[in-house]
Image 1: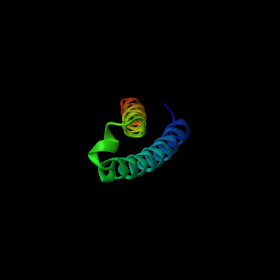
Image 2 (image 1 turned 180 degrees about the horizontal axis):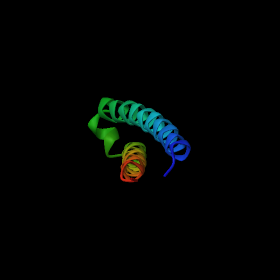
Image 3 (image 1 turned 45 degrees about the horizontal axis):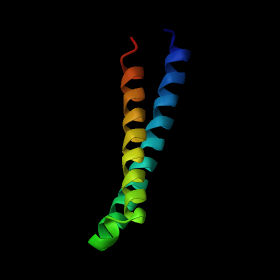
Amino acid sequence: MNKRRMKNLTDIVARIEALAEELREALDAETEAFEAMPESLQGSERGERSQSAIDYIEEAASALDDAVEAIHNID
């Protein structure tokens, strides 16, 4: 891979990492909101939606981490 294409991939990795960080911030905020709910609300539909959002955000962040790893594996 030439330097120009490698530079392009490096730029892409930086953008993905920035997005992953934003997702982690959203995850922290949603987790804090869920944990601040009374236990009675955590088991409610509202709590279940919050937990579902947490799960999906974690999945999205993990997918971005996997993408970065895959790009780093390019020689």
